[in-house]
Length: 351
Image 1: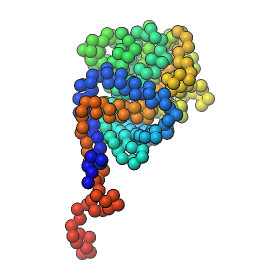
Image 2: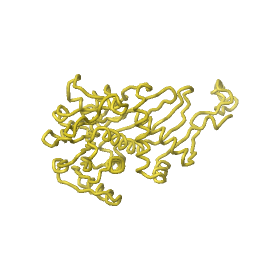
Image 3: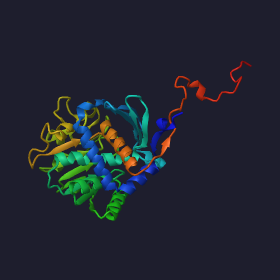
C-alpha cells in the first residue's frame, strides 16, 4: 500500500477558521485576490461552463466545475434565504481540487468561510479595475454574512475609509456596525438605501432574498459611481433597476452564466457587456472617465473557487497543516476493488 499517494488533504471549517486567524483576514483576502487575478489573466487556459443549478421554492443547490490542463475543481454550494429559521447559514459550501492526469482528489475543503473571502476578494479585484482610484466612501446595502468581509477587502485593498450601511433588518446592520467598530473601521447606519448611497463612490448590493427587486434605481446613481451587484445571482433574482444597467458600462465574469443569473437577465440578449478578464489582461480599458458609471454584475463563477481552492491548499502548506482523510481506497491491486471488502468465507453461500 502507498497511503501517502492516496491520502486527500482535508480542510474542515474549524481548520480553515484557524488558518485565517493565523494568517489574518486582510492578508488572506489580499492573497486570494492575487490568485484570482492570475487565473483570470490566463482565461483561455480553462475549460469553462455555467454552473448546474437545482432550484426549489426554498432556494437553490448548485455545482460549479472548471479545469485547466493540470487541475480540476468543483464547488457544491446552496443559497437558501430562509435558513436562519433553522440556525443554518444562507450559503453553505465545500469544494474539491483534483489532478487532471489521474482524477485523484488532492483536496477536499470547506468553502463556506472561503467563499466569503473569495467573494470579497473578487469584488475588490473588480472595483480596483473599474472604480475611481480616489474612491474613499462605500455603501453596503445588505448587511448579512458577507458584509464584514467586503468591508475589510475594500478598506485594505482599495483604501476605503468610510462605510454607509443599510439593511431592511435593523439587527443585521447593528451586528455589522458593532463588528466594524471592533475592527477600527468608520461606519454609519442609515434609514434607507437612498440615504446610504448618497455621496458614495462605490456601492455594493449584497441582499439575499430570491426575488426580482430594484434596490438601486436610476435617481440614486451619481456620476462616477461604481456598483458591485453581488446579490443578484440566479434566475428570477435581481437588485438593480434595468435603467441603472442601461446607463452604465456593465462588466461580468462569464457572460453565458450571467445572462441567465445576473441583473442583465432583465435586458435583451444583445445588451453589450464586457467580461472582466479582458480588463485584467489589458485587452480592453476599464474605467474610461471620472464621471463614467460602471457596474460589475457579479454572480460568482467557478474560476474564483478554483483560485480559492489553490490558495487554501498553498496556505495550508505554508502553515504546516497536514490533515488528510483516506477518501480513496488503498488497493494493493487496483483491479481488485472487491478484495478491499472484508468478506467472510461462505458469506455469499445460498441459504
